[in-house]
Image (cartoon, rainbow, N blue to C red; front, side, top):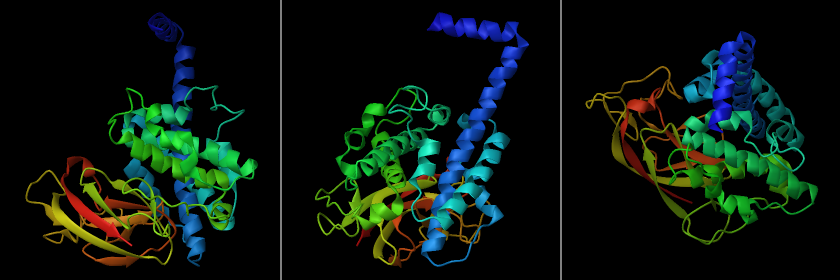
Length: 346
């Protein structure tokens, strides 16, 4: 393997055309990765706007989500963002206009011929994201979920992502370049469930009872309408992570109870402190997910939908149906410290 890699590098230097070809491939992969992320975000937001009875609510600053989530491991920033914007527009239109369109997800993310898009090799976007463990784990799970959802739909099987061995054994896809091993399974399973719903078809997934399979355990995936198992989860929301998946599926109109404790630093300056309601000195940061809310505040979103404020509220009504995420209202979480402890019950 090392000799092959060395030969490839030597050929690139010996033949400028080879270098141009490699750069072209890298550019294509960055654009593809951006398009896939953008499509997923746009489709979630379009679907939620339609379900809430809103008019088309597409805004240019929605693209900022792609800029905030960008990582150098994705490739060239401008190329990634160009792909993200194109994917977001296409995804929003599909999500807003169609109740059930699994084929589009299959074309973008699904396996072909029973294997991955490159005969068992990870797709370009998944390889490109290997530098970020949460993103790599989510992408790996999402693709596996797409394939499992499509297969169950084709076999006319009732939807149940939890019965899939790939879902239960998500840690088996972990590689040495995937980052934190402890956090990998949760991120993988989060992506798997999201992908399964899209691969199976959201409207059919809901109509045949998808998501209503009781989990009687105290950890792992939960659904606010399971009617079984514990009805609360205790979570740690680190200030250094923009969005933390809760593994809780909520349903539009559900009332969720929240108890939050803890304090964070939302910059490297130890004086810049925030509790769940936000900055103690009432500062804001323009590049945050919610620029008009106080910096460092606890916020939420459903799937990749529009963020909403939580702060020090003790209850809220779920604005949409999907997986609940909790996050930090900041434009750069890399220099933060501290964490919130959150108890969610329903």
